[in-house]
Each structure stands twice: as C-alpha cells, then as structure tokens.
Amino acid sequence: MQDLTGRRVFITGAASGIGRATAARAAAKGAVLFLTDLDADGLGATVEEVRAAGGRVAYAKAADISSYEKVRAMADEVHADGGPVDVVMNIAGISIWGTVQSLQHRHWRALVEVDLMGPIHVIESFVPAMIAAGRGGHLVNVSSAAGLVGLPWHAPYSAAKFGLRGVSEVLRFDLRLHRIGVTLVCPGAVATPLTETVEIVGVDQDSPAIRRLRANFRARAASPEQVATKILYGVHSGRYLVHTSRGVRLLHALQRVAPPLYVLAMRAANRAMTRLLRPAPLPPQAGGDTP
Image (tube, rainbow, N blue to C red; front, side):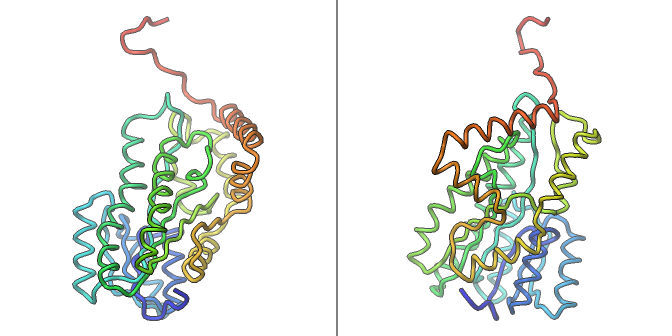
C-alpha cells in the first residue's frame, strides 16, 4: 500500500507518543483517520493538531481497547460510516516492569488485557470486514524489543508482546491470501510520556537510581516521529519486521546467530539491572516458617 490518499486508517493509542505521531504522518500522506485512545483529552488534542495541519479525521472516540464490547461498538460505528477500513494500526499499550517476587497478579493481567487482548479485539472487530471487502489492506501491530529478546524485569510485558508477535507471525501468512499485509514493529527505547510514568514495581520510583535509569533511557531513545516514519515505511514497502533501533536489531541478530553470546549479554544486563534497582526481598511463603 504505497499511497494512503483517501485510505481509511484506524489507529489505537492516538492520544500521545507513537500513536499521535503516526496519526499526523498518515494524515499528511492523505489518509482519512479513525482514532481512539483511553485518554479523551489527549485524543482531542491529536484531532485538533491533525485538522490544524489540514488532515482529515473522520472519527475519534475515547475507549478502552481491553473491552471487546467497546471495540466491537467502535467497529460498528466506523463501518456504518463508509464501510471497512483499509489500514489497522495497533499502537496503544502500557508497560510495567518488575521481578516475579514484586509483581502482583493485577500487573500481569493488566498487561495481557491491554497489550495482547486489546490488539486481538481490534483485529477480530476490524479485519474480517477488510477481508470481506476484497480490496486488500494492511495491519500494523506494535510489539517491542521485549517481544524479541529477554529484557530484564519485563516478564509480564514480554508475555503480552511475545504473544502479539506470535499473532502477527501467523497473520502475515493467513492474510496474504486476501492481499492484506502485516507489519510487526519492535521499537527499542522511544521518548514518549510512558518513559516518565512506567511503573517499576518493588522499587522507590523517586530514587536516584530510577532517575538515572530514566535519563539514560531518554538519552538513547528514538523520537515518536522517527518511529512513525518507520511504521509508514513498513506499510508502504510491505515489510513484515520493522526495527526502530540499531541496538535492538543487533541484539536480535545475536540471539539468532550466536546464542551463547546472547545469553552472556542478557545475563550481564540482568545483573546490572538488579544491582541498580535492588528489588524488594521475597516475602515469606504462605504457611511456611518465618525467620
């Protein structure tokens, strides 16, 4: 899909960061936008920004993509106003870090419901109509470096992002039969508002170590606009796997071609993270002896 002029593009997570930047880029290419995000105020600001630049927003609604019923209702509204979309972009997501002894069940569940089930809700609500229309299209799923490699303290995030990668890997072949391309985007560090608000469970969020970690993250992060450009490149070129960071690309290559070196690198990263953040100690087991 090399020309987005007049194409109907549905984007989740459009209130800020990568989602807002991608909406702006797609609108500049002539797309007609259908936008959603949980943040109603941020979504409204994106709509104003796109329209002020001459872009077209046909639909914008605040919604929680972890609710299938709400996503299904949005799809019905969008389809009632002009039919199926041409491009679906699953960009919305949340992030929580922590060690297994610090994480609570709600953290695991929140990440799976938003970062994995959210995109699945969008796929099952919008893609069948694209297939039925018979005019092709494109699906973008934004995973993460944590969907490719074993980043420290990312177990629940990786559970969702590896899952989204698996969904994408299957759909890249299933949907090819219907001329619908699939792009899996795996960003590394990206300078979005999420970098300042990500919850790191079991540590003092205001500690000097956390401040240093956030500063280092920002220093090597890509901008949302850079990532948005990569996303549209994936759509235009039909590319399946899109990296946004040279470091992530190299680490992924190391994992595949030199597994022992990858293992050493990830062990070192895990030790460094643990020394830096010093997670909370493991609580006594229920029913066991307390020291």
